[in-house]
Length: 152
Image (cartoon, rainbow, N blue to C red; front, side):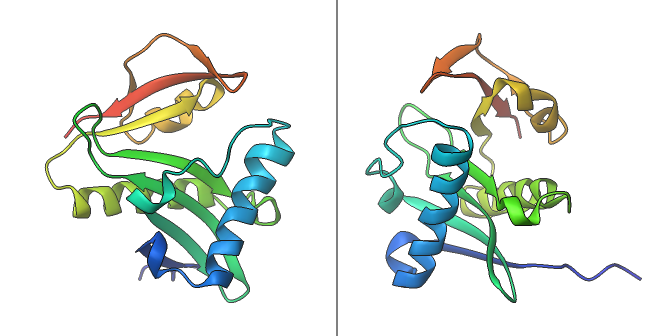
């Protein structure tokens, strides 16, 4: 017998989100990346319309999210803006979110490797999903990052 999932998965384009869903998504990303990490950067970067937005919700609302980039001539499909609500941490939702993000990328872009720009301190976490470093460490908005890829 398998355990029942404690969340629902929703993957949609930006234009398909309601105003309330979009507000929740942007609020979570700002709460985590701008406020919690004390990093002033352009969260509204003009790229959301070209991406799929993966949301994990429970009966109370949004609990985690990720942005899934379509492949471009310069990039493989990418997973970004991976965030878990601070109120829902400690429940292994980061692992669930990455599993769902990889599954959604594989469904949307079959046979393609997946890229991620990982905060350096999370390399081991992403390595657990098959991602390997493909760059030296670099600063992005003042935070050390490394590019990683998950091969097919």
